[in-house]
Length: 193
Image (cartoon, rainbow, N blue to C red; front, top):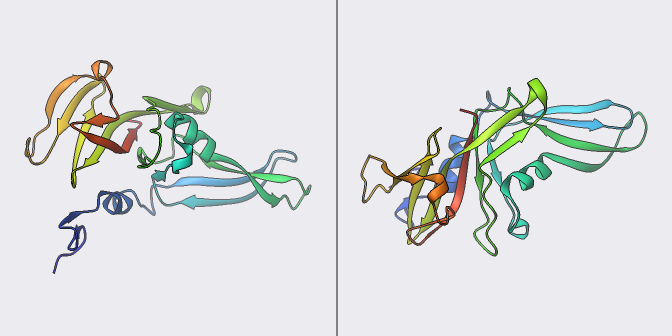
């Protein structure tokens, strides 16, 4: 019998389940802070043990970076024990956060807009994550494009390229980075590296 990551029913690997495992960590976490902006009281601090984000379908047609930033800072119905005002849940994305994360894109409806880099914080606290990979799904098969620091794009398809990646073009020359060989982008990878 097949074992994870092989899905015996479908004859392959479920890339989302594999990424959930790869990007779960007890050591490299995002800090989640519940904070009251009115009286500057921190209600709770906890860890988020996953560096994988899922964008809901109804959020399509917006930029990935804007969607993530909205998700990272949310008003909460919880009241502050000091002043009874509404608290804010904030996922701290800074230099202590994991070096990379993945975002699962909605597979239905309108496509989101790709963000090449996502910056948070200001001054010495500024942290920038850059787009480093796009995983595509279609025809029961996954392929990927990877970007190096110079913006060069490399293509990988285990069937046609084997264990190697093939240089394709500079990122700026891609017509539609969210599709590749008839496949639609399903996951994007961002890294500080």
